[in-house]
Length: 183
Image 1: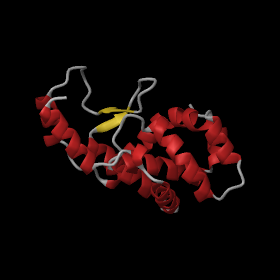
Image 2: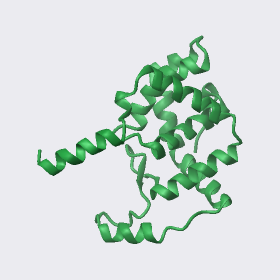
Image 3: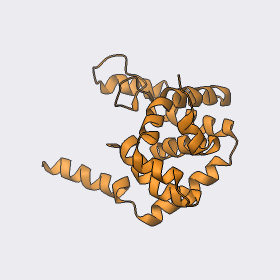
C-alpha cells in the first residue's frame, strides 16, 4: 500500500467507525434511537431523509444489487469537475420538496429493503420471536446493516438514511411490512 493510501486509510479509520466494529452497546443505542425516531411524525422523517439525500447527492439506484447511486450520475464517467459543479449548484430543499424526495427514495427502495429483511430467515425468526422490540432490533440491525449497508462507511448521513427507513418500517409494523404488497 502506498504511504498516502495508508495515511488516508488511517484518517478514515479514525474519523468513521465501520458498522462491523460496532459493539452490542452500540446496537442497543441504535435500537433505542430507532424506536425514538419511529415516534416522530412521518412527514418529519421523510423531510430529514429528503434533506440527507440532497446533501449527500445520492438517490435510490435502479440497479439490482445497489441501493444508492450518485444523483449526478448521468454518465458512467467519473469527473471531479462535474461533481464540483453538482455540489456547488445544489440548492437546499424546502420542507415539501424534502418530504417528497424522502418518500420517493423510500418507495424506490422498498422492494429491495423488503426482500432483504423479509426473505432473511434470521430476521424473520427475530421478528416472530417473543423478545421486546428493542431486543429484536439489537439482533436484527447488524444483519440488516450487513445486507443493506454492505460496503459503505456508516457515517452519520448513511446511518440516518438506514435508521429513518427502519423507523418508518417500525411505524408500519415489522410483520405487516413483510406482508405488504409492493409495486
